[in-house]
Image (tube, rainbow, N blue to C red; front, side, top):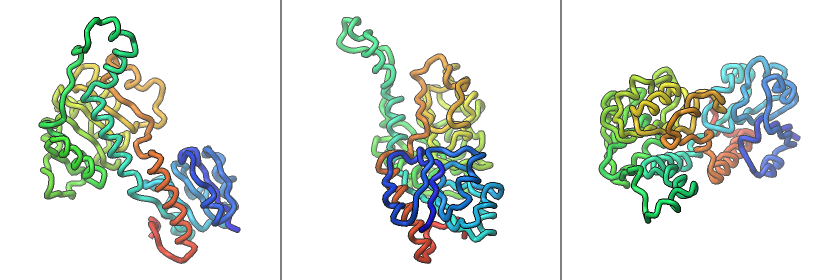
Amino acid sequence: MKKIVILDGKALGDVELEKLKEIGEVFYYDTTLENEVSDRIKDANIVLTNKVVLNRENLIEAKNLEFIAEVATGFNNIDIDYAKERGIAVANVAGYSTTAVVQHTLATALALFDEVLFYDNFVKSGQYSASGLFTCLDKPYYEIEGKIWGIIGLGNIGRRVAKIAEAFGAKVIYYSTSGKNSSEEFERVSLDELLKQSDVISIHAPLNNNTLGLINYEALCKMKKSAILINMGRGPIVVEKDLAKAIDEEEIRGAALDVFEIEPIKEDNELLNIKNKDRLILSPHIAWASVESRDRLFKEVVENIKAFYRGEVRNRVDK
């Protein structure tokens, strides 16, 4: 009987653990602190982790460990070199959340374009009832049709967003952060051109040396004052204090973030104290986490484990 340890199951939500119990005995933890990892995995054959770090220091006593299942796409929380040294297989899951992230991108864009937060509050606060007028035109809202939608990171998610933006009648341009990505469908431009031309900028890029701090105050000031910024990539791509300043100074119209420099967001983060809160939509890194997306993710994790014990190489990142 294999011993299976789930280190941060709370990040998965409600999943069918019965599928794992077909493989072995499951030891489930909602969360695991750094100083708890070694003890919890020391007898494990299989470990599931989403954000918990597995490194040489806490893996060294896990003498029975055969397989690490990364319950996500990114595997920077795992010491792959040490896993190879020990002959521990590591597999991740890619592409499971594309639909969810694309949908959340469009949801936040539409909320900002249609001033949903402002008008929702206008009605619920009683201002509408007291106004004496059938409508309210205090806050102009705009159509996506005819606008320019700039995409930073034209991977699977970026391309899907581009297609939907086109369906809304927008022209799509994109910037390749690696300099290698090219597309015959959409116009590739420099970062400066994208910043200056776009009415919407959505970020779907990974975090690396090319993207760290890419959207800072200088970059934000190059954007149209009527433009909105959406970050669905990684938090540190956007310098948050610079974004808060740019919104308060009305250098841009607004922004939506699902990812942050530090997660969860700190209570003293400048973004939580901006003057015009209806200019900003914040969500707690949930764009990936639709019910369907989490179901796909867990099914893939289980299949990765089963494939390993059948002698198959499936979604392995240690090769």
